[in-house]
Image (cartoon, rainbow, N blue to C red; front, side, top):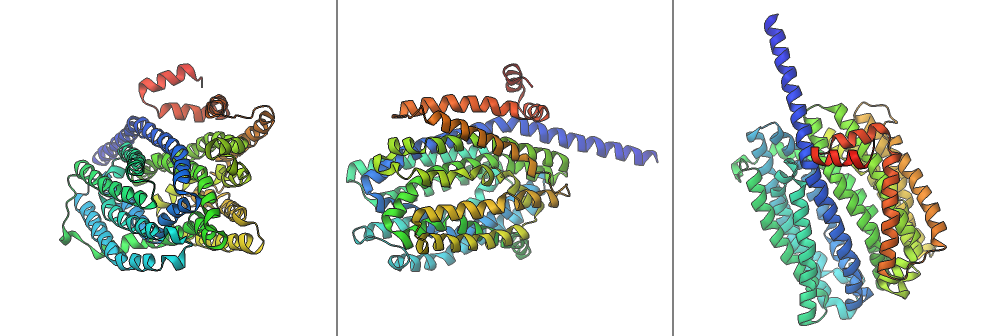
Length: 536
């Protein structure tokens, strides 16, 4: 009896130590991850604001519209790689967190050689796609040669990233997202420097965008490989560690994720192709340019939700379900409130923004921007909940629902664009309606059910953000009658003032418990500063 009590006490102390270590690690790493995530997003915004009009001005609308088309070409195979990657992230993170070196190496080598096989298989398929590119996409004759080079570089760069991506899993597993974002920042900066340098030296041409993207893929691969090996020296390449049983385990989860992301592809990537194929090359270029702002919001969502993803998996691996639920609820609530600020600013100042950014000829596209971004308060706000599905390995129903809704989006978009005659606006409207129908209810309810929580647990988390967004839009449109920025300085100053006021307001909209939890997750020095400046 005494021995059992001692064993129980030791187990309790060990679990307490694990919880303490996990929380301490999260507090220590969170500001690093978050600061680099924010910096990466700001760099992405700055480069996007500058690079899009630069490329449109030097290449033309039709040529610029082919750049996202090149990315879309690789999306079907990226579904496979991404789904395997998500599975690898989950299983390898759990193995490393539990210090199981043998299991970790089996997963690592199974993933690497599976990626290599996928890459080899894709080479002839990419060749066929490129050979018949003119039948699949609308490519002006004068751009055909450059477009083929761009597509070839995009495909080659993607295959390199695919094979090397497994070396980045230790970065994720160690919650070192600051490293991943540093690599992303370097990629973005070098892309601008490379494109501008080649344009200045040889003249504007679509092919140079492909050359730069390929060179960046090679460099990023080498950086990821070096850092990944340093963070997880126990992982060694060994074909004998390849395990067919692990393939089945990874693809069992990855198979449903494949279905899920096939539906996501029909939501988020098919719109450019519809515009290019059924409306026109120049209209696709217009759509792609305006889409940049929606992509920035989605990118911010992906990046910031990524800060939470490792901890959700780690909490699940260590059976800390209560902490997982609290972190997820707080993430959605804070996320929705913060997103309301840039979304409202983009809606209110869409017309002057497009005029300042791209010129008077684009100002008439302001309704398109409003349609693209207004629904993101929900559709990006619930992104932290996607991590729950991965952690719990409950991805079958999300896969089926997303695929069904993705097919509905494709059908509705083509119908509205081609047969109703709404053009690029019909494509944007279809995506907004169908995606919101999925994420407003299914995603939060399913996340709660698979954690054995009440079905409404996460529904209430984004309501405050929607109400806040509605209030900001009303105030913004009233203000917009009196304030019409005519320059970057005027627009930036106006958005900065409104944005800071919105952040302060969002802090007080949070409950006292949420504010306390946020402060508790902060490191010591920063926590003291926040407590003095922002009362709980």
